[in-house]
Length: 257
Ligand SMILES: Nc1ncnc2c1ncn2[C@@H]1O[C@H](COP(=O)(O)OP(=O)(O)OP(=O)(O)O)[C@@H](O)[C@H]1O
Image (cartoon, rainbow, N blue to C red; front, side, top):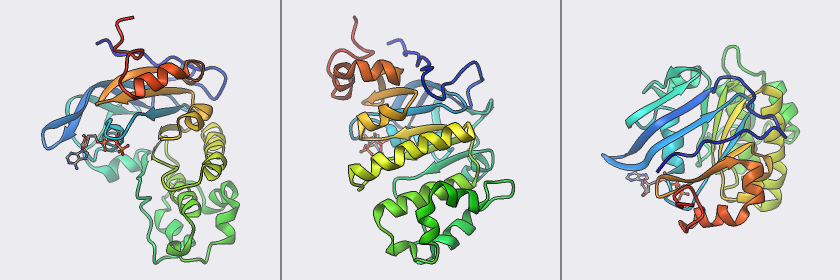
């Protein structure tokens, strides 16, 4: 199979001519010696949001974990800002590759402010700026994180990640457990922040239409392989092909046509 190239969508932040901030070059990665993602090649540019889609078990989380160095690649190369990813997650985070995990990674006994204080980094984004992105969090700043709603916790997880001023933000299922109306509110904010900070985002998301609505580009994984890739605009226009790729039917990159 030839790995498809993700083309640019010039209607949004777009990738332009800038060098990619995150590159996967023929990456095979998995668990305990069993590949879960095979020969994956993707580039993500400053300010670009790439939606990483696919059914359960397709390899989306595995891809994100390898991008932060939490899972060693079996073959191929991952580079961030032109340098190979380190196997030390903390070091990659300092270089600007930050993961918002699907469990949100929050301290439930601590207040909103204390969660944010712990995530602060020298040279990072000030807490006040993050409060401007999410004013609701400021009103909740003294509240224990464990007493926040799911949507508020997700805002806090995003806010925490933004404090590190990431060049590449990897988000695993922002909408997990959230009402669609909350996702509809959060995703455009993410788009605005990516534009403002020229931050690249890899967004793993089950709400396909909402993700394609804010993304520049998209990749559909199926059984660890790229089944379809293209600009978000192309995929929005070819929604039937997205579904076919998602469910492993013909019409994706594996389709001889
Ligand atoms: N810790 C692990 N040990 C062994 N196999 C794993 C482990 N984590 C994931 N896998 C396997 O790797 C494959 C890809 O899993 P992954 O979690 O990356 O998929 P996903 O696309 O993120 O799925 P979901 O949408 O359900 O979160 C699956 O077959 C899964 O069973």
